[in-house]
Image (tube, rainbow, N blue to C red):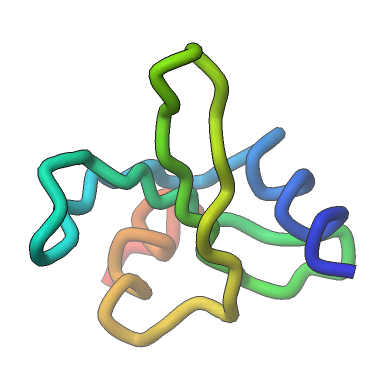
Length: 77
């Protein structure tokens, strides 16, 4: 289930990146980390006006974010 997978990454991210989405003035925070099975994920979060966090993106880690994930894990090139 994506909710549990996302929670695992949010609880213990290895990297956190601010991402500006085209056409959106808000910053999405991209959490990179592993779910409970060790699967590398990216989880996108927006802060709401009420002070909450809204998860809008959960997927397998893409290659373009892999260097940030590897650095966060301590796996330097």
